[in-house]
Amino acid sequence: MTSVTFPEQLINGYRAFLQGRLRAEQDRYRELAQSGQSPEVMVIGCCDSRCSPEVIFNARPGELFVVRNIANLVPPYAPDTQAHGVSAALEFGVMALKVKHIVVLGHAQCGGIRAFAEDAEPLTPGDFIGNWMKLMAPAAEKIGPRGSRSMAEYLTLLEQENIALSLDNLMTFPRLRAIVERGGIALYGAYFGVATGQLSVRDPVTGKFTQVAAEDYAQLFAQPRF
Ligand SMILES: [Zn+2]
Image 1 (cartoon, rainbow, N blue to C red):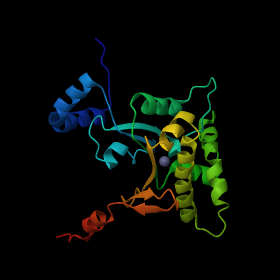
Image 2: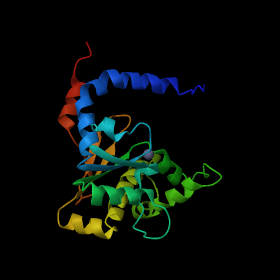
Image 3: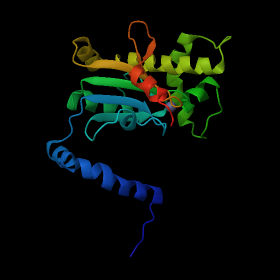
Image 4: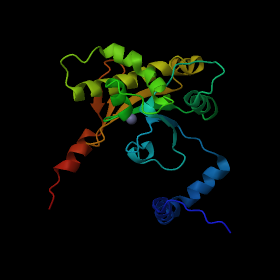
């Protein structure tokens, strides 16, 4: 008999899932297993362990179709012989699941973006990360050099411009572009403040990010502590 060791933290987490979410959602899981998933929202987020879209949006099973990668990047359309993870997920989300909304979810304190901004040494000898982060170059070009801006200010700008870049790159996929242009799919940019818990959404005209559910947020922190 072989014994498999599995991280205790995960087993305990699974136990909590059994008692909590599975107990509450078992019918929904069964239903989804039979009928298949049909999420209306696709999220393209960062791998960062603090930015789980399902947690931030309090999503139930079957509600979000999620693809995550370092710095929530969407590479431009490139129909070559390479394997493209994001493009494959997009194709499935758009063509098979027929999602109605695509959200690019960026965040504060993004390690990938900081590495790019600081021009850090590649983190791995194979340098997958360095090559991947090069996709961000057009966003950095757009906001220009750091100049007199503080590093924090510059990083926020870059994180937010990077979301705009991913949105632009989504429009390089011809079929997706056609669907967006006829109103079948809406694209959004959103930004999560890890330290604050604030969520902001990008105005497609001005490019500015504005906090959503600001009143709820303000109320939460206005309550007396005792
Ligand atoms: Zn990140």
